[in-house]
Amino acid sequence: MKTTVIGAYPKIGDEPSEQELRRALHRHDRGELGDSELDAVFDDATKAAIAEIEAAGIDVTNDAQIRWDDLLAPFARAWSGVERGPLERFYDNNTYFRQPVIKDAISSDGQTLVRDYTFAKGVAKATLKAAVAGPLTFAALAQDEHYRSFEDRVLAVADAIAKEMRGLAAAGARRVDIEDPAVVASPRHIELAREAYGRLAGAAHALALVTYFFPPDAILESLASFPVAAIAIDVRSRDTTAFERLDAFRDKYVLLGVVDARNTRVETAEEIARYAERALRLVPEDHLRLAPTTSLEYLPRDVARKKLAALVEGARLVSGEKVPA
Image 1 (cartoon, one colour):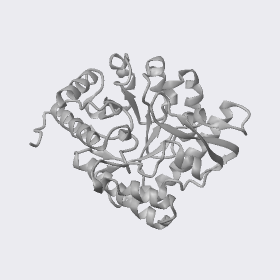
Image 2 (spheres, one colour; image 1 turned 90 degrees about the vertical axis):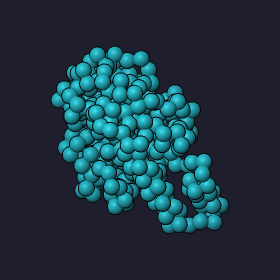
Image 3 (cartoon, one colour; image 1 turned 180 degrees about the horizontal axis):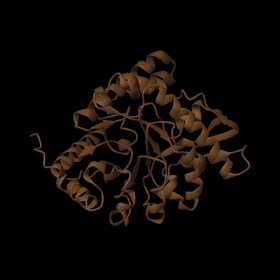
């Protein structure tokens, strides 16, 4: 049984060697470190994070999103027509994002993440995937001073995201996570979300609609008709009926969020295996992937490492593999 990660990995750890990025950012803020020198530190931190993810035995990694201040930041910085605004709370977490402010028509050159993906491709030994922000989430969390309707805003964001995905595909990305918690947070917009995803279809080879924080119960069967190869479902953050309805995704891969990325308690391998076995009643084994519920950046780095190790051990238990001592 394959395993993967979702979103960002913790950037800073308790060990002195894991705090170089923090020191570099402080020095950059004081004008003591140039942009190119800071980029080199970001590269080193990315390399170290990918190495930790792979050391745990994860099958499919991302670039750890070390350069992402938040889910929306890379795009809010790069897109024409968008500025970065005030800090706002990110859903029901004790973390914040800087709200994008849409001042004019959004446009993208499609190159926002290409450099970072290319660097990670030269580092990663495991299968590498890319990630983008979801169109509904970006549009829902942005302040809009340009578009006449929410629908216009969502579709404009979708067009910009599609361009980013084509840029990533040209750089070699064959798998792309679309992190879009607003799809399950605001189920009333499901038809608009489906239209937006129609604009993303074909922009990369294998797309995954990644939801988290909220249960998909109100729209689970509707998600099955989205033009994506995989659906990520968080089964830990809130009560959900998803386990009894996963057969709706019989034509897709299911990325099952079984490790709680917002709770420091480390799951046992047996606990993870039980979640997987419940899903296997309705999902073929070759279509099930195990994952954290969301970004591990909400956790201390040592806890994140332990959770990934437990995730891999649980997957091996389900598959009947011998777990290395």
